[in-house]
Picture 1 (tube, one colour):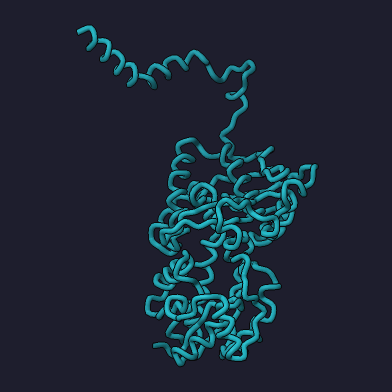
Picture 2 (tube, rainbow, N blue to C red):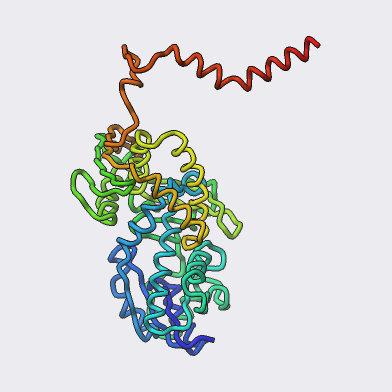
Length: 403
């Protein structure tokens, strides 16, 4: 049992039902906690009143936008962590920052349990509970979707209405969406049939290609040790850069993907994701790294970045391995300082200009014109040594054939 529970509260249908369900089934006090990770004022407006009408004794809200972007998003970007080659992990790293703040509220109010509204089919239950396990293993975790007998949207609406709780939810939910400052995801509805192309009505942050301007736009992003610090010459905080860049990139149709991913729990799931600012920032940082990082370091970073992406996706942000890998990525990014111009046009974000005080690119070496710093004759000896294993193998085959 539990006496005092802090619920990760969004004000949606599920968490509106969870408040009275916890009271009915656990006889506990419920404190509602909401996290502002940039989902927009329309989702946050009126939450306190709604939570208390549902039965919550207290309501807390935390502005996590800056910590979300600077502590979770940017390190993941520096690691070049992309899940299964395409997903920029928008939902994945929002969960640990929310759960961390939820634990802080639980400590503040003396709660002995936390609760969430994640279903038993998805990844988010793992992300929330792994964070609690790492930061507050003594807290009980309650996951109503794994306990209650409510199995449909209609049953949940009936449940809350029977308790006098008004909800704006309809009995037919077309799409399941999750939004934060970095991205918005769309699942369910017509997307569950893989032969259906994404309907035009799902997209919220990005224009379609035919709606995007015919004239491209250039944006300039400045980095210091891999961290974006300025947009178009104006120094801004990390969350401010993402917020300012989202509509610019979205207007040009940048940042859409339609992905069938492998969930941690074993099933495949289709999602359409919009990450306009993130797509541009990833492109800009890669463009800068191309002139700053040496080959071996960059290749090793990319290899370990795949592992980092898996850890983030799997909810292991506070795992020792994730923290140890970050030490490597942070060192790699130390000299990744400079400016990049990215051109946005009809769904594409392409680096077109870049410069850095730490560049390893030297035009004197790369030029096809006349130069005196690279003697092309030296390449012969390099090639003979580089190809020596193949040469030895071929000689052995020839010798063996003659024998």
